[in-house]
Image (cartoon, rainbow, N blue to C red):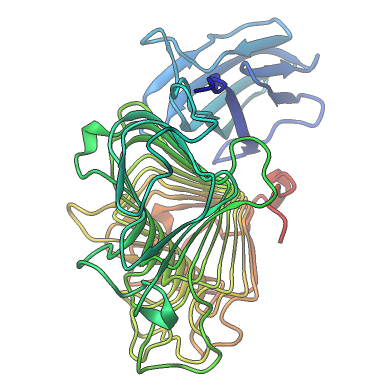
Length: 466
């Protein structure tokens, strides 16, 4: 067996921007430049700044780094937690910059940064089939594997992962389920809950760790695909990465087919139970479509980054709603740089169904034990969804950070009652933080600042191609 390349730990800052969160704006001559790189972040002060200080804190408010006041021109921070003498895990963090210019004026700015690292040391990768042959449908995977042909399953699960330090490389091939479910697929088949699953995990959270599932690890003619399962991937464990995959099902017909509708529990990627453990689960650079929900999260510590999430819908009346990304009592979740479009069902979308209305991005929660709080929704393009664009519902959706999103043309092809930004049966909007969003319509939003405050603080969007 040939030895595969061991993946090195790489730290990347995905997004940094400045917002004046109830702080005085810096004068134009007194500027602080923030530059991300592979090894850390460099903060640079202009000559107009006399003294300055950088603090790094977690979303929960825990101080992780404090430079103290200084007079030198630059400061390099290497993603370190100086309290615990360790590098920070994947996630979203705040930095607070306090400056004093030469006229004695003191200003503070708040910014956010997101750290994403590649998985590490997943063990030798099989670059040629073993004597045991290619995996079969329902195989339990305990070591790294590479597919060399398509895997077609007839009303069966695809692969089951059980173990640590595992890479599953689809190598440009597909895992597909065919059967008597929705339009000849396996959507609607299998046990209650997830149903039949393309790639699922052994149902013991602490036994699955450091797992990479990729459509193509090196160079492939096509992207790896998971097709036709009720749930494309069902994630249970710690430090799981899903990247470079197409996860899809049958395209819904233009006319409702109530005789055999797409089931409401059909999900592209479901994050059911992941252990934070100082790390995150990352869903990166995937194309997810043709389920009832594209990404559905019932857990914590998840990054959803650089994905295309579209055309997720049901076509039954009544129906549980179609969403691109659904957070269900989840925190902290980082949703950044995604295209989220054409989710929900045209013509039958129902804004009065507050529990599960159609939406591009939906946050729901119920006190006291199912809180959707301290989540970040930033730098996404959310458009042409048949329900609401960004939709908050429930009595425990609060202290979320929603910034620099473009949310337009949502609800246009649905009955009246849908908006680009919607609060429905949610707490007062002042409990969330909104900055720099571009949108057309809004409902239920009270208080200040308005969702489009500080647009000039936003960087140009970096999104996957349409």
